[in-house]
Length: 128
Image (cartoon, rainbow, N blue to C red; front, top):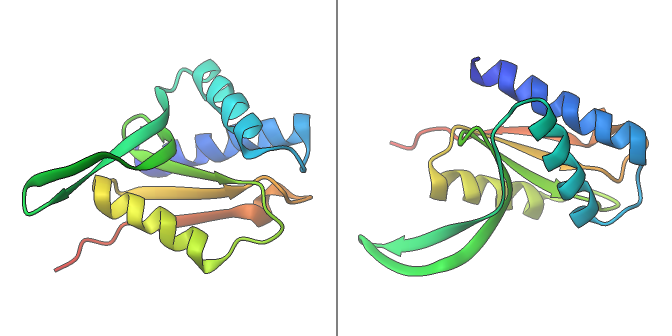
């Protein structure tokens, strides 16, 4: 399965969760339910994955940030349940992508009437 197919499956899973629960719940509820849904789709999913911070090859801390969901060790999924996604949320996901060197991230805001309006796909462009 390529990264675009995987991304589509994650989005489909999020839509399934949103259809069942609707908007307005805590982010942690959506995280738990989405992890279950992805697992039922036979996808490998990890939750609350710590991102260690290194500087010049030295580990500074193991607990710099935490990824909400890491799917198939490839796609970082950051969940929100907010009135409006702001630039800071997008920058947060981009930071996670850069620190983990993962190719793709999905920012999913469950606090939308139509979930498709709350999905942002962010590509980790190689720097250089």
